[in-house]
Amino acid sequence: APEPKATIALSAKLVDGSGHLKAARIFEQSAPIAGLTVPAAAVAFGQAFGALAQGIVTWTASAQ
Image (tube, rainbow, N blue to C red; front, side, top):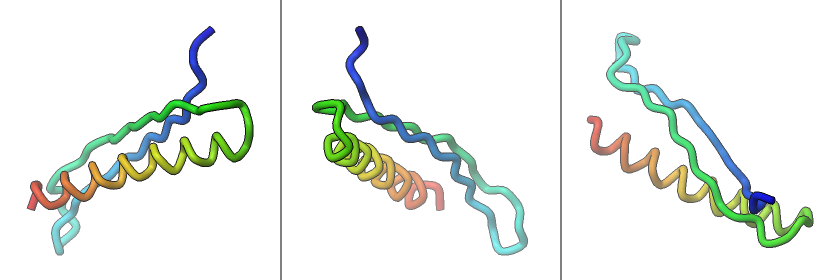
């Protein structure tokens, strides 16, 4: 059986002041879930979101 994991996917767009699209990207991040409990799932989603947010910030800074 596959190992349980938390996966988050998010689409981000950068637009300029006049509303024109400058860049777009889909981000996806996963983290393993240590056990099939709500607290373990919450930890895994927190880890996945933290990594995803870091990727978005890095991408945003490099795209400008």
